[in-house]
Image (cartoon, rainbow, N blue to C red; front, side):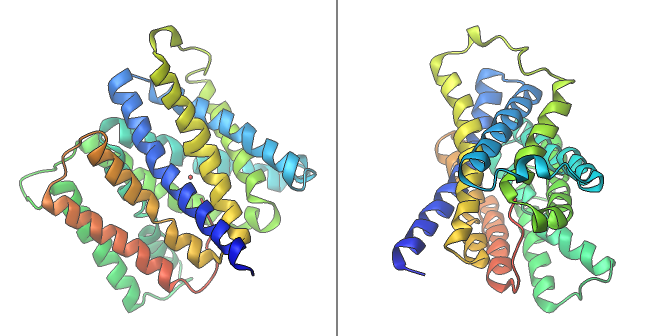
Length: 306
């Protein structure tokens, strides 16, 4: 593989992961400064981003897969379950955690998913608990404690609803990752994720129709932030991340994908001015170290997910 191709791959994965992290912080600004409804943003984000991903598949890849995925009843049912319990659950719980807390905490809690997957596989006797797994769990749980308490035993340093939604986001991401494996083995990821987004957005439309919002009270800056979350923080972020696999090994993309929580933390602290204590920075470092350890020690291809 030539050097130019690898450089392109590095650019794509770094850009994609960074946009994911920044997208969460921009969503926080929309919730807290402009009062945007979580249900509306998740619905709109999923529907538009899903349609755009399928459009990319139609224009640049095997277009027959777009509707081919629905030809078998079993596959169609799996896709619907993935869209509702995987994609919608991940997106909604993540955004709800941001709404009640901040993007940094929400993103870091979501990245507890690998630890949850380890426990699940060990309990199902599909994996053996190794020493490296113990180190991973210690880093994750220790980092979480410091992040959420700032080193104090007297109480949480972030709102309890943010913690609950964040942990649920991690659970949802673990399910999302494991359940998607057979689907992604047969079809392009753009097709699976694109349809899953549309299914999740369509289902949530019954709770909050995307057309039921008064945009007249929003200024151009707010509209720009909404467009950023949908286009750059969702569609382009995922597309770039997937495209990087054409020129980089999955281990490399997983490693560089750890830039997402770092980008979320940095933009939350330095752009939005959310205070972070010393122990919260230490906890953040532990969680990012856990992510890096998993990426470096992973011996087989990982399933990529946003």
